[in-house]
Amino acid sequence: MSIRSEIIDGNLAQRSSYGLIYTELLGWVDLGHAQGTDIRNLWAQMLRGESQSGPTYDVTYKQSMVGLKRRLTVGKSITWRLKKGLRYHQKQSIALAMMITVARRFEELQGSFPFSLASDSGFSGEDLVSDLLGFYQVMSCMNNVFSYLKPISKEEALKRWDHYGKIGSWKNETFKPLLFPDPVRSPNGRPHFGQLPDFMKSVTPYNRWTSEDVGIVDPNRGFIRFGRGVPRV
Image (cartoon, rainbow, N blue to C red):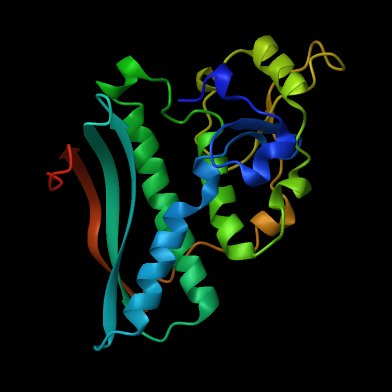
C-alpha cells in the first residue's frame, strides 16, 4: 500500500530501492515493485537449472506480502518445468508470463477478505505497471531506465496526489500506465490509460502451450509463513 509520505523526487529513483515517484510515461511507480528482485531470482533459477543434469528443471515464481510486524508472510506462487537448452528470448518470454500470471493473482489476494480490511493495495493503480517495469529493468540492461520515463519532482508529484487522492483508490487491473494530468495545466483532467514505452513492449508473454518446452508443475499455490517457519499451503 503506497502512502503520501513515501513520495520522493523522481531524480532519486535510480538510486532508491524504496519509495513512490510519478513519471509522465508510466504514472505512479512503486520503486519496491520496480526493483526486479523477483525476476533476478527467477532468472538465477533458470541459470542453475541449465547447469544441472537431466533434460528438464523446475522454476518457481512467487510474490508475497508481510504483516503482523513482519511475523506473517502470505503469497502466491507457480512452478513450471522447463526444457533445457531454450533460447534466451524464449526464457525471457517464460519469465514474463510467470510474472504476469502471479502478479494478477497476488493483487486479487490483496483485494480479498480479510486483507482488504487493512489495505487498499489490491490492484492499486501503480502496482502492475511497476512489476512490469521491474521485469524490463532486469531484461533490458538499460542504464538509468527512469530517465526515459520522464520523472517529475517531489513537489509536482505531491500536487497530483493531493488533487486526485491516494493511488490505492484508483484501481488498475491491466499492465497499462494509469496517468494523472497535471492539475494546474488541466484542472478538469481525469485519470486515463497511456501507452507503454517501446522498450516495455519488446517481450511477448509465453503462450506456446502445445509445445513440450514448458510444463505446469504447480499452477496456483497460496502460502502462509509464520515467523521464519516453513510455508503452509
